[in-house]
Amino acid sequence: MNDLTITQASCADDYDPNSMPVAKAREFIHRFLQPVEGVLRVPVRNALGRVLAADILSPVDVPSHRNSAMDGWAMRFADLATAGETTLAEIGTSFAGKPFGGQVAAGQCVRIMTGGVVPEGADTVVMQERAKVNGQSITFAAGQKAGQNVREAGEDLKAGSVALRKGRIVRPAELGLIASLGVGEVAIHRPLRVAFFSTGDELKSVGTALGAGEIYDSNRYTLHGMLERLGCEALDLGVVRDDPALLEKAFREAAACADVVITSGGVSVGEADFVKTMLGKLGEVVFWKIAMKPGRPLAYGKIGPAHFFGLPGNPVSVMVTFYQFVRDALLVLMGAHPVDPIPTFTATCSARLKKAPGRTEFQRGVLTRAPNGSLSVRPTGEQGSGILKSMSDANCFIILGDATGNIEPGTPVEVQLLEGIV
Ligand code: AMP
Ligand code: MG
Image 1: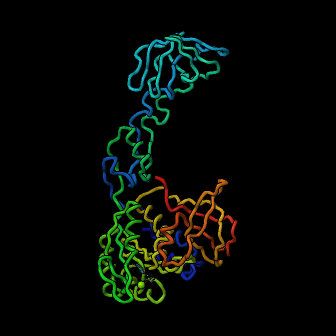
Image 2: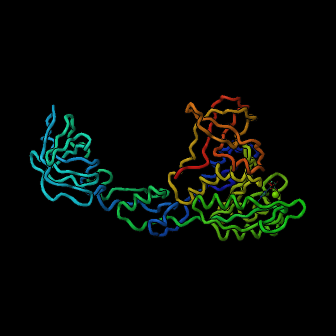
Image 3: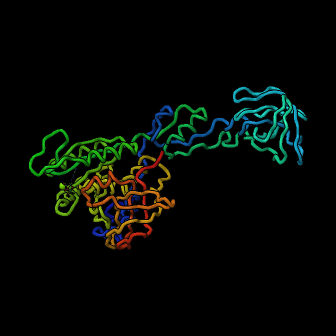
């Protein structure tokens, strides 16, 4: 942990817990994050979604031999006439995995396929679309360039050079890249253990009957999904009643078994007070009213060595605060480096949006491409922070910054996609 304690950091001059800008809250949290320790060696496939704990050096040149980028013929460039066609004698073949053993001399060429080793003597490949075949006599069009269509050994990676840096999250492309080096096992950061529970007397778990005024707990399901997607080990500790003794026990247990504790509910005005007192006993936690909608109340701190995120109770607020604050923090703790913010881009809003200046709003939107090719976004409908269907119907957030007021149709707005392709 940083030597700057949470209490000290929260005493800074421009720190206002009752109106905390989104960016400032993120910055505050990031001061206390260090990757967790612990490295595992796993077979390559098991590294999917995990974070590399060491650089991966290429043990070989990639490609390992000079090879052709095209189907065609390999020859000496010096043999090709600069103006007009050239006819050369085909003396053999070099297919991928079946190299031509001999030398290419003046006046000769070798039939070569993509990936085939470029034979000794040859330095250039002419693609087959630029050649005419007459038995073993091959005639090439004018205008070829020296060295074209030849991939040099080590062109992608030299033996001993860094193929992937530690901190890289392993996606399908990295699995393939690692395999292409002949590396079968990699060092990864151990999975981050994240314990979570819901708080609220009104909450029932799926599978039990609802009494008067009770609702099903959905936050543990969205949290489970978001954590699993991120590659964390998600530990579901169930529902805890709004009872100080039970909550204290739950916090103690969670902090003892996990790197991170996430709760939902219990941080809004009125509910926060006894939680505050209790967490003051167990650790160091700050409570904020973030200048955002949804997701106004938020708590962050440390309970022993565990990081703590107290998310609001409303189902949409849980998801929005997770993506805007928790996701990046967990990635840092998982050892990912660099942690890039989720990209945003601009689309034209097709509807009128109500928005009060002074806070950042994360409305749920549907992004589509209009027939003229431009990007268009519309809100999913009702934007209440309890309406989880607004997240389910959405494919993006529409982010309306602090200074923004109402949006008229046709105005460009910032959007952030909810799904990536890899
Ligand atoms: P709270 O932040 O505890 O005041 O809760 C705000 C709203 O979110 C209330 O309407 C709660 O009933 C609701 N809520 C809290 N926790 C959950 C949960 N786990 N699942 C569904 N709704 C919840
Ligand atoms: Mg509650």
